[in-house]
Amino acid sequence: MVKIRQLRRQDVDYVLQNTKREQWGHTKRDIERCLQYEPNGCFIAEHENQKVGHVFTVNYDKLGWIGLLIVNPEHRGKGIGTQLMKKAIQYLEKKGTKTIGLDAEQKAAPLYERLGFKKAYDSLRFTKQTQKHTWIPTQTKNILPLKRNDLKTLTKFDAKIFGANRTRILQSLHDDYAEYCWIAKRNQKTLGYIINRKDDNVCRIGPWVCRPKHIETAKALLETCIETVNENSIEVHVGVLAANLDAVALVESMGFVQRPRSIRMFKGETAPKGDTLGVYGIVAPETG
Ligand SMILES: CC(C)(COP(=O)(O)OP(=O)(O)OC[C@H]1O[C@@H](n2cnc3c(N)ncnc32)[C@H](O)[C@@H]1OP(=O)(O)O)[C@@H](O)C(=O)NCCC(=O)NCCS
Image (cartoon, rainbow, N blue to C red; front, side):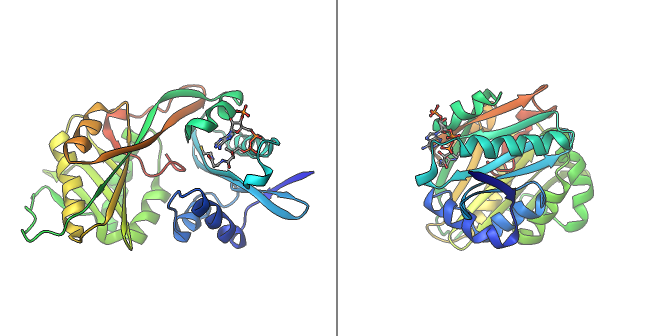
């Protein structure tokens, strides 16, 4: 018999071990942050007192997100993944969520479809390696370091485009990666921003959000991230929604190479009320 219970801090190493096995590239801090976002909305499945799987949620008011669903390989195919998903959906619906989103690996899509999720569009993954350079990066006067006191106005800007308020996510990412966050402004008006989660030898870009059709600004933000790293062979990863053709064309023109894609799926009333054309880079599959 499988029991589902709330996930606690002591379970973070177990989750990390699972994400490592799946080669998802999470750090311990990534998982701790996810637990901080929704401390009561992350769950562990246990069989005979052994941990056998987990799932995480994030509640953005009317929009909810589900991610980090993994079941131990020897326990798969027995309905545990479905049970964890049902618990996550129930948690979000109790919070008043009207729409639930997730990024599905191809093989997992049938599981989600059985639970009422519908495919919206592909969620693409791109990678490139950095090269150390000797030139001084061109200073675009519109691109400035993102300061903590920018966050209040920024979260309003972000909510219009993403479709929900992500204050606690943006604050927490800024706390961890302050020196890798940039904002684009013109005449005091926010045009876009980008966060580069730079860890030892990897950069994970996102969120990367801009006013729709401000392609030059989006490009300048991404270039600033890459140029300021200025080290050799750092892998840069970014997740781009296939529905944003400008973003796809932009990363391809900058030499990013596509990796296996996921599928963005939604369950519920409607897709979020944001503007997909302004979302150049997602935060992460588990948070949207
Ligand atoms: C996805 C996963 C959690 C499902 O757990 P589970 O306990 O086996 O799930 P259930 O028994 O409730 O349902 C089985 C369904 O899982 C999906 N599935 C099967 N193998 C899978 C795999 N290797 N990877 C992802 N999903 C898979 C299928 O939809 C399957 O349904 P089907 O048999 O009708 O095709 C588990 O396969 C897993 O941990 N995979 C690796 C991590 C992963 O891909 N997570 C999902 C990311 S979106």
